[in-house]
Each structure stands twice: as C-alpha cells, then as structure tokens.
Length: 116
Length: 113
Image (tube, rainbow over all chains, first blue to last red; front, side, top):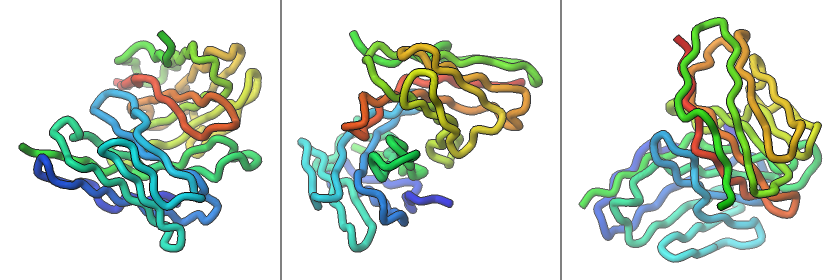
C-alpha cells in the first residue's frame, strides 16, 4: 500500500521556466517531508525538507509547499536548469514514534527533464 | 572527508549464491538503513538499525539478512532465498533521533545471472 504517491512519472520543462513536482500522502501521522534528487546509478541526495508546522520552506531555487488538509506537497524549482534533470523522490515520516522511528516512506519518483 | 561508502559499485553473482554488500559510514551516525530500488518502484526499505546490535525488518526483508556489530558498518547479505535479487541497493544513515534526514551512499548494482 503506497502511502506516498507521486502520480506523474515524468515532467518535461524548458530551461528558465518553473518546474512543479507533486506528491500526495495518505497517512495523517506523517509530520516531516523531504525531497531527494537522484541521478542514474547514484545514491539520492537530500534536497529540501519541511515540517508539518510550516506550509512553506525555501532554499535558493527550491521551494517546498505543504498543504496538510489536502495531504499534498509540491516542490517548485525556479528557474529550472538542465542540471536539474534527474529523478525526484518525495519522502515522508511520522518522526520519532515507536518502531517507526526514523523510517522514511518514499514515492516512486518523478523524472524531470529540463531542455534548453 | 566523511561519508557513506558502498562497495563494490557493480556485483555479479550466479543464481543460488549468497552475496554480501558492504556499507560503511564515518559520519558517527547512529541509524543505518538498506533500501532496494527497482525501475518504477521507488525505494523500498529492506532492513534498518537504530543502534549497534539491534535491527528491524523493513517492508521487503524476506531473503535478506543484516548485522550491526559496529556503529560504522551495516552489511547486507542477499541470500539464495531472495527470488528477484537483481536490483540497485542503497545504504543510508541518519545522525540520530533528533533528525529525520537520511544520507545515502552511492549504491551497489547487483546482477544475478
């Protein structure tokens, strides 16, 4: 049962435009959310995160928005660059609660392609 | 230079053989994790360990085994009982209970022939 869903397997955006990657979750116990970026044959690298007490977190060109009532978060990349082309994974966790301490639940990823 | 290392990068084994994947970290992180990535499947948790000498099964632990004898090391053994072992295996670590962010190694591509 997929508790974190990324319904768009791919997204194609022109360089300089905004990329918006979406993520939905079903578990209301999730209170911390992360985005990872992954190139082929490499490990994912942490990009940005957000706690459920916030609705927005910004880091340079990357902004994550959280809508708790809709159980939805999105990652905005502005402006998009060709080097941003990668698979982006959304992850969520209920934080420090019992046996799930530290567990991350991942979506299936969205392949972002930024073309010149 | 701190980080997580996984070796080898590519591994080939014959069907029916057990194989052990290495994961070492010099970040002094308490928790370590093993994930498996298959095309279109995202990352699925195999095993995780919060402290030395303790580990828990993840969602797809069948056919795998782990040990955590040292804080720095969390090797994963893929046994012959694992029906579809060919995959990309990722190891991750987390500093401690005060943070949820995990940091990943470069991965090992295992191909069973």
